[in-house]
Length: 566
Ligand code: FAD
Image 1: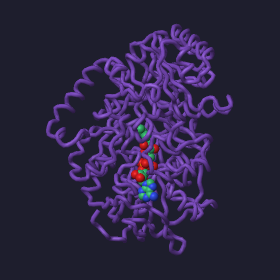
Image 2: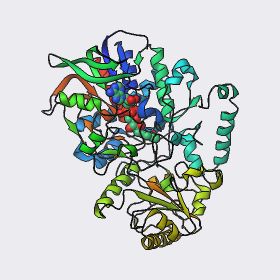
Image 3: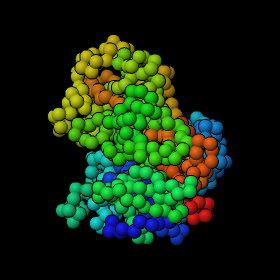
Image 4: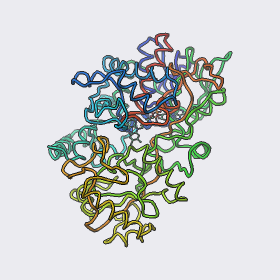
């Protein structure tokens, strides 16, 4: 923070995982780098995320005997993404992503483990794998950040056990699916947290970071090792252009506008525009609401997008989000995305007519896309949608912040949550009245779903009918781990909004992460990665880690290109 130098080879705007990866590799190429971050905390959405990265053909899976290849992954992406994205860019991703991970682990403190059972999101497509392409950050002891620990954006409660304790995606999956030994895993995690007396005296925050917090903390520490400066509270405003080439940025710092010069180039890595209601209104499907986004409030407001547009940049996919249904929790600054819980057996999601409109367990992007489709078809009945579950579900499973009643019975929940976060009634009819959903419609839908639960086959939407759905299903529920009848009162309902974990559209880039003009020429000296750029996956979400994998890979590519290497 103390540095006042204003001339660098490379300036990186933003401090998410993509930005940090770019800065790290640029520094290792011998370039002088400055990172700037608008808020008082570094890490962005990346820090509060699951931190998973989708890296086909990665060395961790190979080391475990996994069977993946460039060709298999190419087949899968061809089937999923099609020609919606420039082929050279997609190829660059597949070629460089495994290299990026290998290099990162070799030269930095970042470590991953393979999620061998986390399936690709479109298991029916050719080239899909039932696991092995998603990597999960290992636990990282963030006390080595020393005074920088305080500036790390804290993990979101969604990603922590009991809202406090760090756990890896693999541990979370074991507990949620109630796989063999899950109680021991939970007990071990809780004991370790409580017995860390020295740290507990300092803070409630776990010094052991996992998921996105681990990714960002280990990247940050690796950047500290390289003495790469990171300026917090430094708001990017405009690009500086000299002789048609981007040569720096104008920022606001301590109430002053200053110019920072970048002799090689500027990497825009400042997220999407999900926290800018005006840009949402301009680009995203309606209705749209900033408050439905699970990303940090006030952070990603699209300044980089607007600055590059002013220089004639092209955009793509602007009407798409990295959708995920969210539940607003009273008193929390942002809503919680509901990734896994929709697959647990004993729940149903309905629109205002009490009708199902989607496979509840579908990938989160597809789920919200279906909300929008149904909302249009029903004249506004699916925004919001309602997730409804029975007493047995409530006892055994979590839904957003409601921990299973066997751990946290209703009496121990904050009183203000009743009738705001969740609704409760002895009968489905009474519940439907409370939430304004058509009662007869709901009862018909539940009766039909209960029938499917008994036969194990969801004839309407195929819930639990593929390996992806079953990943979060309950292993001890038969014949279909994602289906159980809703029959034991009381019944519960929670509101689901058409949320996101970032926007998907942005600046159009080439295979080197260079920003393109509307005529297809590159804007010299300008790069964009992460959600500042249009997704390399087009309209799809091929697997867990589909946003951070590309953000980091194109960060690696941009750094190499700036150094004249890749
Ligand atoms: P960010 O990580 O948000 O970083 C952008 C940074 O730029 C922010 O710190 C912001 O403050 C800063 N910034 C913005 N404007 C300016 C400005 N004008 N000047 C300076 N700085 C600025 N994706 C995955 O791939 N895998 C997962 O496991 C995963 N899990 C998730 C779980 C949750 C709960 C959530 C909410 C999201 C998850 N995502 C996941 C999505 C993923 O976190 C985001 O898509 C990703 O972090 C976006 O990265 P980014 O670098 O583009 O932006």
